[in-house]
Image (cartoon, rainbow, N blue to C red; front, side):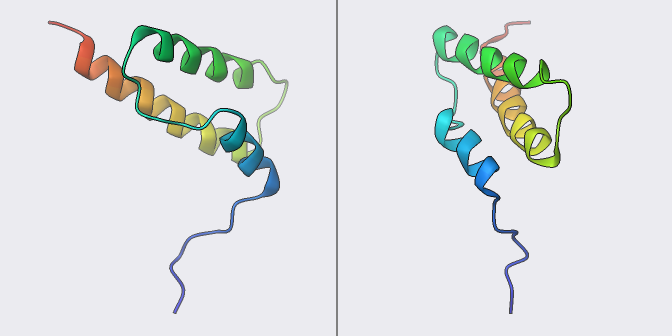
Length: 71
């Protein structure tokens, strides 16, 4: 029986190693994550691995903003 998970490509593992996604706990980490997102978005063409990695980083940004924004 398979788990349904794909084996990550070497490129995806490079992305994860260069800037491992972690929960954001302060403004400096928030800015570093946003910089990493912008770096990938500046590429002329995104592949599936780029989009998957951006989704993970985006979720960490969203979570941090939900915790820190006051209404």
